[in-house]
Image (cartoon, rainbow, N blue to C red):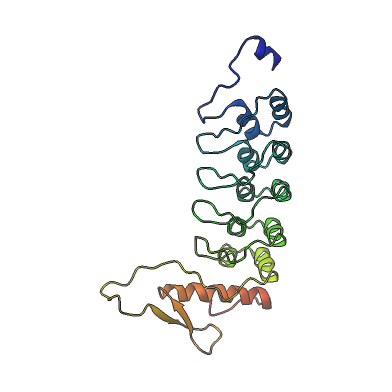
Length: 241
């Protein structure tokens, strides 16, 4: 580094991703280099072309030691990039448990969704990161956050066959009666006055289940219920599925 100074190299040059050396060091997790640049007052809170600051990049790639160093220089740990992602969201998205814990301890908001309105809990359940789901549940994450996609964390865990995640969500008292609410186009030739409420057959027998939206939701809802029954009762197969 001293030799670069001697040769008057431009140490604030930007690469093709719009990143100065400080952001590049964070992206690679070079903790000692980050500390050196901070000591030389060459650290920066500037963003790259994707709106990422150094803390985003370190969290995204699971560089928890680098995250810890950067947190000493950062005041706004819930800053979002162009995709609406916080450093904590990126750590969860990448399945980086240690980095997520470091950011949680520093006060990260676990309920900030990204630009697509997807929450960190939805991301963790979809990807089957059981330990991260458990950590979020311990931190009192909003289980029923009104976020897109309209599949709840329980729907996502069941659809992707993450049984251990389902068990964690059920232990946290996730609402097992919740319906996914993805909008469906009205059938051709039907007027707006016609009701969109359909009756779903109950896989357990008994009264039919109400369903708001397309009849295809009946099959999806039945599969969700059957999967839950399989897990709770530990049956080998549920024929209505």
